[in-house]
Each structure stands twice: as C-alpha cells, then as structure tokens.
Length: 102
Image (cartoon, rainbow, N blue to C red):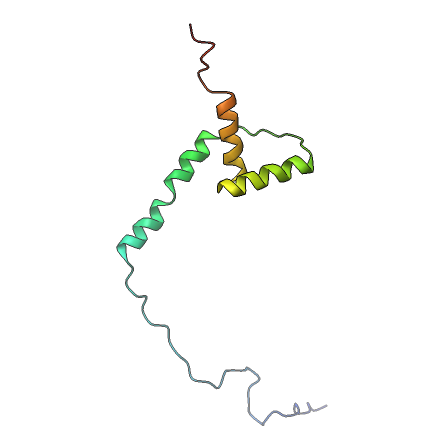
C-alpha cells in the first residue's frame, strides 16, 4: 500500500510552518533612570508603617443606611472610611484619658 500525498502540499515540502515576514530583533534594554529605580526599590514606607500600626481587625454589624451615611461622610471629607472611623475611635477612646490620670 502506498501513501497518498497530502493535498495542497508541494512534493518535498515540510509541514512545519514558518512566518514569511521579516524578523525584527529586540534591541538592547535602554539605560534605566537611577532615580526611578531607587524610588521603585524604596516602595511606600508609609504604608509599611501604617500596616504595622493597625494589626487588629474590628468587625461591626451596622444597617445599610448607617453604612451609606459613613461612606458619604468619608467621601465629603476626602478620606477613606477606615481613616474616618479610626479618627472617630481615637477621639472617643484616646490612649491616655484625662479622667483616668491622677
């Protein structure tokens, strides 16, 4: 039994497909800006410190209406809800209360 040639394939041609277009090599990487590289490596130091400060999580059940009021208040003050509530709790429960000091 003889093998039949594949349709649309020229005799002696291989079946591996190669792009017929022009190859464009990728050039060398442009020199980096040392100030930009240092800034990237530095990261956000404030976020790391802030993350170390707030390590306990507090979960509350509130009504959707109260949640909406809190979000609107935070937005109008230009702060996050977390920062707004941290400030409120700090004002209500300061680390050193005046009435507890002798």
